[in-house]
Image (cartoon, rainbow, N blue to C red; front, side):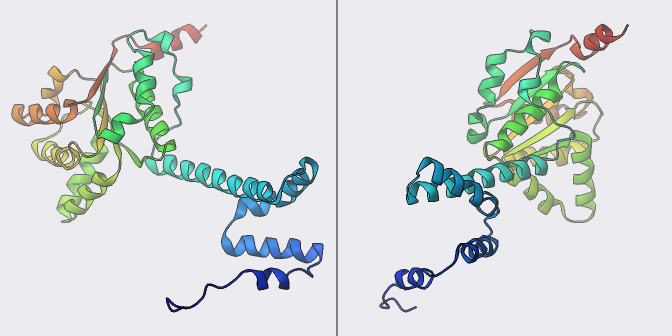
Length: 270
């Protein structure tokens, strides 16, 4: 259509449809919803008509109800896709976390993090504590909350990430792999500190951290205090640089040394 061409009026189209029978109208709506990819409207239109008649909705109200239902369902499906794409090993939610079992963790701090402002700012988060103190639960739960809010999230184990980076470097795909990890809004690295990393692996991990520095957030969970990270990153200067990347403008939550998972297991054992 040229810029000077008049806009096409919808009135003739509506007039051509006036003679539709109820059955033909239902079929036309079904076909149109398929073509326009509106599965929620297609599924709910019959029920919506019944409700509209009962509650005497206006045409605008009826249309709004259908369109909002489609939008809400698309948001829900997008949220499910983002959570799935994050690669979490299991489902964890903040509502399931027992704050009473670990008094070292401040619930207000965690719930504030769940709002996601730190991700928008590109700040880091560190969860430090012994095994069984809730680090991974909080990491996954906060990542799930972020994905549900619309952030792109990626979860990985530290050793898995390093192995992937080493293989990418060997295949001359390192830049592409680092860029992929750099694009997500929140990168979550679990079990950092469980295994010693050689200098090459530590340097590759440092490249990922540098790619994301002050741009996109990183959250890590580690069973080692920062003073013990020299056991993981054997080069002291590289270790100091990595700690700096993960703590600058960041939040540090120490989950303590008391394993409530072990305590729960003992309590449940006859």
